[in-house]
Length: 405
Ligand code: PMP
Picture (cartoon, rainbow, N blue to C red):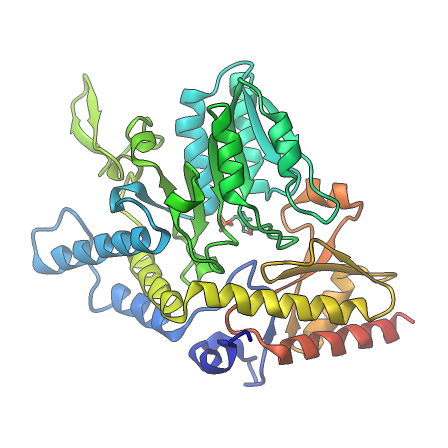
């Protein structure tokens, strides 16, 4: 039986009530997660009594802050199963992580006639940076199709590999369909032609235990705000030997070894990729978020959210005029459409019932084109979600169907 973390943890999240103190049925965790009090407290301390800059200060508070910032890096490394903390780069979010790889590794390693493989279900942040690289280098983008039920088709992926394929960049978990990629198989396919594998782990990191060695990928991107931490912080993980050979992408303070007007030499990773005053307070709050999630057990979260997704799919299937997208086995994200009701109208009526869902293209317009819809309604679960949220959603859908006749 699935243990339900929701009952015990809901009280830890001050954002899970409406302004009037009523329960809020927040079903938009794939967009951003609510924060536990422990994260809010860590952020408040870091911005308050602990606040100072890092790395440069000779005074005690700054030295303490430096220890806190580097402890956050070590905590991330441990949480994702990195070989060491030097493989962990702090960035603003997954979008910046992917742009870093594109601008640094991509512009150095991808040339005219090379090929970059993406899938049909990618988020725009794992499409547009590669289009920019392709435009500048003359490389070509190949799009891996999906299976009938909305998973990345690994058979097709294998058939698409060429000796010129340099990179395969895929979502570990789809933000629209909840499909989970067999990352190890994708890594083996990419590596069979000497290509690198980048995983967009935005939706996987908050739901699954991660182990970089077991996944077999070369780059991994995630966002702190989806992992119950603050906005403005994310992580790029890359293999030590790949990072060591990557040129810097932004220049400034903290990323250098020695600067003269004749020539500048650069610091080793991770500092080489963290120009300027780092994202100090957010990294420290992310540390608290990881402690929170780790204490619950990441594997328990997947079981919990996949169970809720299964239940919601079954209930929706039982209603008239509902189309379900994506595979039966979803990592807590369910996209659907109701005949004759635009997802935005549904979202607006649900809001009156204190139910928050997402309606739109979810930054995946090519996937919408593939599904043949302009938008979907999306309910996504978090560790605090429970059956009451599903019941409230269903009540709202039934009311909407009555309104629309
Ligand atoms: N990839 C996926 C799969 C996502 O769900 C998101 C966020 N919706 C992103 C990338 C981008 O993340 P961020 O906006 O935090 O940089």
